[in-house]
Image 1 (cartoon, one colour):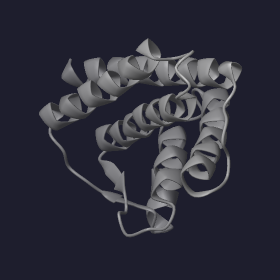
Image 2 (spheres, rainbow, N blue to C red):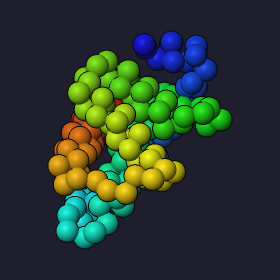
Image 3 (tube, rainbow, N blue to C red):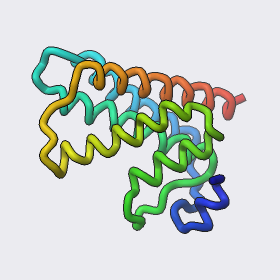
Length: 148
């Protein structure tokens, strides 16, 4: 599914944002990611760290959309799902394995916040950290290419 199909499905809309705003969002995503990495294990707050890693990924996915001139419609159900799905589509299948795990991470984070899930494994935390790092590094590359 490409951006036109996503737009036709009434999930995303055209959106213009400055590179300065994109850079501010990138810095915030990096700060949240760095905080999570610094507190990765042994704190007893693994669910909070996992949520922080998820938030850095979600912001990264928003940046992918912004760089392409889109955003998920705020009024749409499943805003996070649409944002993550659209970012994966806009990257043309690049990072498809990471995006499969990110969608599972989104579901797990949702169960933390709204359900009864109470724990996260060290391996899941480390995988989430690696996926977030790969995405944020990809975004750095995309921003550099826009600036040049």
